[in-house]
Length: 255
Length: 271
Image (cartoon, rainbow over all chains, first blue to last red; front, side, top):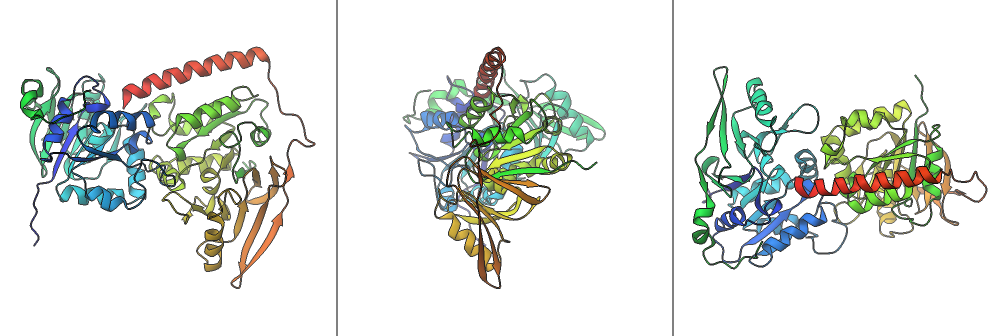
């Protein structure tokens, strides 16, 4: 039996971080603090956006000053440039934090599976590399997720590192609550609904705490009990009050 | 119902690779019986880059057609379910990029099934590079960096290798795959060459550049048998490219710019 030095950790954002919050580094700082590294190695996976250039640029703006920042493009593996070209495994497994961007979760998981990245990420998580992301970058870690395009909201299978369902941007769309409750009532497993600006921090597969960058943003445990869907608000710590202690003097790029 | 099934497979060329040479793209428009065909661009293999999408509208926006694109990373831009969008078009044009990603994303959204059904119904399929190889049993892709064989959708029998002149490291890998039986015999097309398939038979080869060539290669008892294919040079003596009324052209240009601005704002906020 091997010993594990580090507990697997996932920080799943309902929305927020550098993708959505230009003026707040609270959630990103919280995530970085979990790495315990003085200068964390952070790798960005923008797959769900189709490796959108503007997204990659925003990542480097936020992280390159205080971290060893890199990104992996799954669309430009045949070209040179700043992306990581070869050996995905050794690069990913050497990171302190893997940051998954938002976008379309179905497209992202399709690409990951086609390149074997799903198994690599599972291994990285097991080894204690902190995994995080907003939106599609949250949904992917769960067993099931609600993905809403136009038309009927869809149940989507994720990587299943966390044995729950997940719904993001919970406060952004008025219809989201009813859609999620309906799916849970129909048999989707119980899970977590998360507003923009809120992050769920899991240690192993247990929810450790919920933190937020915004005063009124929240998160909810949504469960099917008997034939009822029960929604329970989670206690959420607003990081704004603790910003100074979390930063811990680390030099981070201003937003 | 027996609609004509049509695929135009480009070894390279068209609006992304030939910004000043519209011959292949004009030829694509002639493949539909519609006077102003509805053309759907799928930039999936590139990750739906703005550059490819803009190049598509630059080329087709001023021509006698109705251009539209569909992004599988921004499905919320579509006003209908994907299947309805595809079936409402006369031509589907698939861009180049990563063949491995293209097929994985299509399958994740069941677009592989939708496109096969559309082809059988007579929707014209066109594409270059990854967007050409995807229709065959297999191709040689650089999705992972160096060239490697990759299975395709198999709507057309045989294999295809692209950029036979522009990317010299791809062709030898393809020939090795034919020799070893990893890939079935098939075609290699240079940049600027289009192979037109009606049903599953090669009907014609066309080109936008003088001297551009294609070849058919099969392994017969371990030996490669090559047959040169001389494409018809487009534009030399054919019908002139379809043109459009200037006011209509201007109106569409404005609509297009508006649409792109909406898309851009949306994209920044959505991620």
